[in-house]
Image 1: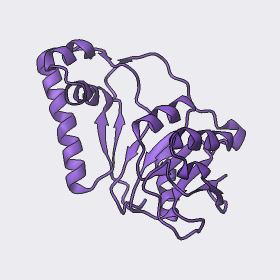
Image 2: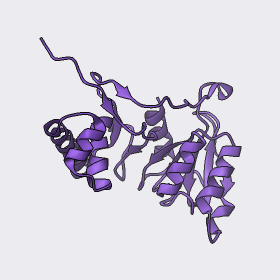
Image 3: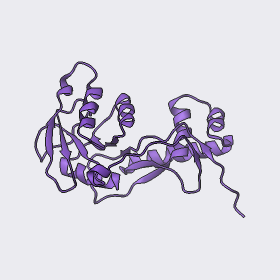
Length: 219
């Protein structure tokens, strides 16, 4: 008889972010799933310098179990980068996560579609996704999957400071629920989480590919 699973403890559910290699398209949807609780151990050890024993205590598992979780997370992320596979964080089915409940994004006023913004370098349909979120010259706004994009100039792109904050305020006023860009800074990720905008990281792809990516990431 299998032992009952033991709840893992994490500080909070990470904002949903899907990491994709340059050139990814929806025709290659294979993705690696990194368990949230495994990544929590890696975050504590590799990101914040905790010992494995400390990380194990915080997550609520034994040191040996934490060691296996750390190894799994490192291996999956390394293989994903090596093989150019998308990867995302997800909870394994047999675990009970003890976290504070988080609010979900309500898209009922847009027919269930999360208004999509894609950071771009020019106000053109055939254009690459901009590399840096807050410094993108324009955003292509899609009100539904089949609509033509509305191009909005990002006046915060040339601001000497607070570019990410001002950009997020602009997107929030447009009712955006999901944004695609090549890179997001840590402040941008935190602020996007506060206003419940999903961040999708993708570089080296064009606008139409970004639309396919958003369909995959938000379905």
